[in-house]
Length: 448
Image (cartoon, rainbow, N blue to C red; front, side, top):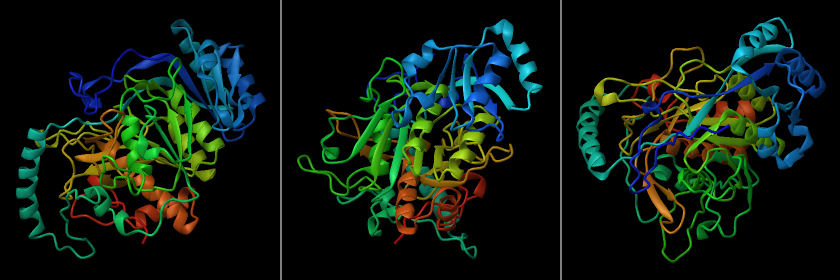
């Protein structure tokens, strides 16, 4: 069930709805997520029995019927419920008059640990005009000059300034990708977003596995957000000519898995996203990048459970912290769902002067809701659907694929997976003269 609400345009010319996610109230679909205990996690029969007992649903579809190809969301939409045994989650439709009874029965069933509403998620970006960027540049330059004079705290590196060059983007320079000897070879990166422009010539010779989890839409990106994120995480080292381009991709040899979970309007549901996470784990993707979310303060038990089980399976999920900050107006915002889950790495955004982006969300005081790491997220140049081919946009969405690509480089360099890969990313980050509530461990850095 997909909401008709549209997400921000992410730099699409003429789109009047260029709003960050904080401008929209959280929406639910009317379906519910059922989270199962570790004791029945993976036991499809026990999970199905529990769903029938508490929700009265008999028409159930399971991902086990589809294998590594991923579940058919068109069929799932017609079923009364969907079971993801490898995640230990089910999604069920519920009549409003039956919800209270279902929740009560679930609370008394030891096989179930939580029942929560299914939410609508959005592409997280922040479309910034050139005038805005010039003003932001001048303001942050003044603040930087003031702060850097006294920022010589032991163990903290001085903030640096970067700029796009003919050779590479400022983000690749700031994260030391341009000097890394690693390419992400042998590592699978799943980007769950608005799909991908399959006609983009920069990716003509790449191995790309695609799957749409949006009912009624193919994987072709009619929005742009997904193509931009895939370009940053896994774009080629030397873009072909013509027209010629600076390097913008972090892990040029990684295997790309495109999971379309957000519609061409930029929105999608938890069911779409969970289906794609299941698909990515089944295909042994070591990194999942999700530049999406909803401005919900509370931690989702479902996403926290999925994040924890993904780590145990050797898959690291990184997600955008959110763009609900209005820092110049005195509101730093908060990390939203699903990035506020303790087992999902929350990524904040910094600009080319190593200042936290005005829109970048601050750590959420809920348990586990902190920002974990930062990536380049302001004025980021990357791939875009044809005929434009390239575009420059901003958001914690743009910071997230930087971190995902760097995670692929570390996975190649060290063989680390899951929680160990998370730890290495944080340990190797470059500390910044900024509060950890804003940038976590600091700016992600590529292995050398």
